[in-house]
Image (tube, rainbow, N blue to C red):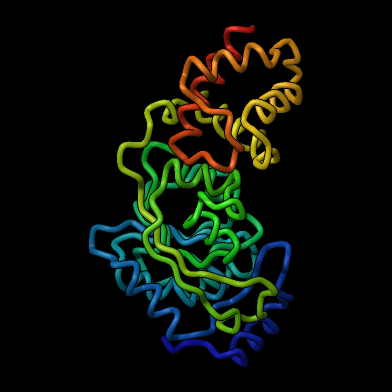
Length: 287
């Protein structure tokens, strides 16, 4: 199957009556070299079960189908879904779904290979990677997010997504990708990333209740990353309505657990995991 040019993509979209949607993050891969590079870096074996999010016009789908034992493709656009169904009707190793991947239970897979729809990157990471059996990921994502997850300890990059991601997943490889490899050309910078499941994820995070608390804690404290930990925690508790937790109480708990009162951005991923356990226990004790 030949690679589609901009002209081919425009013609097909016109025939389908589709105007690319920014809301759905519809940017179609048109660069053959990038397509081949994604497949090469995916190192697909005959035992791999692949998930592709946002099949689009099938630029990656066909290449993936040649390598994988099983390929699950999710495409939320009903017209593109029907196009993919017709295009790959003779492929018995492809299963295509016309569903919102964020709202359904996904079949087991051990690799995600996708040009991720940029508008759902955060929620998609939550669903795919923050659990006890995450897949390997080979993806095109927004460069800003790639920088955050590959360098989570700098002031600029430390954020909820950088800490959450690195709590479950190990970043392996990253390089920038030209936006001109896609049509329409996205107005954001892009990066290729390869990531894999982190070995020895802290058991605290593998409990559903604990993981939900950890996510809330990280999201709640990151707006105060330039504040000292004590002040950031006090603001976090106040925002949750836990005004009965005074600074003296928090100071004592931090001291008992050997936490210095540094600015929040000076702590690393492991620090935040340990801190969340302490704060979770402290909250429980107040109820």
